[in-house]
Length: 116
Image (cartoon, rainbow, N blue to C red; front, side):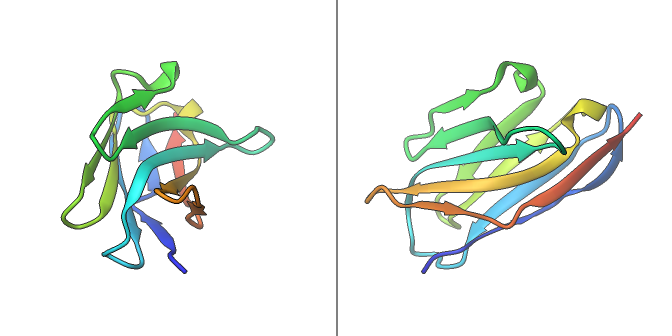
C-alpha cells in the first residue's frame, strides 16, 4: 500500500508564500498524474492543480499566475508553490495521486491558513 504525505502548510499573512510538498511512502512507486485539491470549511473539495508524468500542468482559474505545481521524478515528490496568498486560499490541501493502473491515493491533508 502506498501512502501520500503532505507537508509545508501553516499560517501566513495575505500576500505571503508557502510551498507544499507531497511524497509517496514508496519512492519507487510512480504515478500517472498528481493533483492538489483543497477543501475549506463548508465547501466541497476543489481541484487546484494537476501535473502529469510528462509534466503537463493545469490550474483552476482562481490560482493561475499565483500557484505553480512541479514534480521531481527522481525523488517522487510533487510541490505546490503558492505565492500572493489570499484569505480565500485558506483550506486543507490534499495531495492526490492516480497510478498507471487507475488506482487513486490521497494524503491526510495539510492546513493552510491565510490571515488578512
